[in-house]
Amino acid sequence: MRSITSPAPDSFVEASAEAGFELFYGKANCSSCHSTPDLTGSGLYKVTATDPAGGLAGGIHVPSLRGIASIAHYFHDSSAATLTDAINQLIAKTSVSGVPALTLNEIADLVEYLKSL
Figure (cartoon, one colour):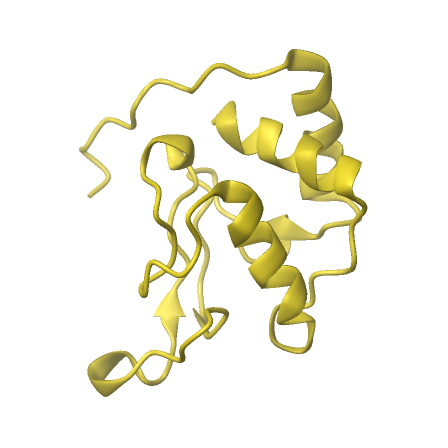
């Protein structure tokens, strides 16, 4: 997997992406799960609309966020059609993911940062 080249970043608004970077490593605490240089992490998580089943029932490994803007739909069950939907789903599962409530502007900035990866 590490030998596969990530797609080029999507177009993004630089100032908003910079604010999103601050959120990613600050208030939104995304880096607590996406903690490695390739923005993956250790551990298994259940953060989707439907819990994983079968061999995945224990949770899903944290995927890399590199090139994330080019791979919609998100999550193992394709329950999020956009990056905004994915962030909102994580916020809704606060008790599982530890994601705090974010304003609409903060979510937009975080999406711009993700598009820059």
